[in-house]
Amino acid sequence: MTDTATTASILARPATPADAGAIAAIYNQGIDDRIATFETRHRSAADIEAWFDGSHPVVVVERNGEIVGFASTSTYRPRDCYAGIAEFSVYVAANARGNGIGRVAMEALFDAAHGAGFWKLVSRIFPENTGSLRLMATLGFREVGTYVRHGKLDGQWRDVVIVEKLLDEG
Image (spheres, rainbow, N blue to C red):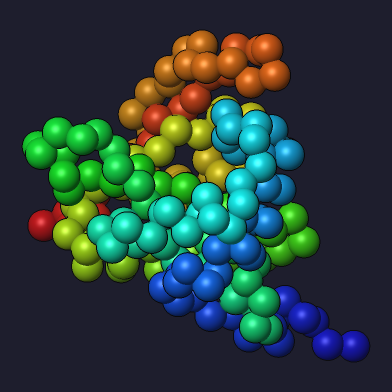
């Protein structure tokens, strides 16, 4: 018997608008899980296509030719002084979690974001999302603090842990 985790072909690459349907499907799983985002409305491929603004990198990870994860950047704040900071998100398909896909996506995003001129990535993670918090810690993210009662999800207040990583420590 072969171990598919070790024989699978895994590839990270820049995403294109043609990947929007697969990205939406993975993101919608994250919405349904209620552990990764305050969002509750499913996204369509057209919604995801709007992410491709030419300034904010999006990467996908393929396993044996199927998109199983993605990481994306978006505007942190509109003021010019924050132009080099991007918010990020990373999502992995339910059937691919726990296999290093998130790490591959984030490492590819580091390179893409740095190449696009960003010097820092930031995000907010639900404290209950221990897998994501562990991954960010192993990737060198610093926990800045916790926003208490940051937003409501399904009528319940939720806290978020703020994380940041400098892309160029030099």
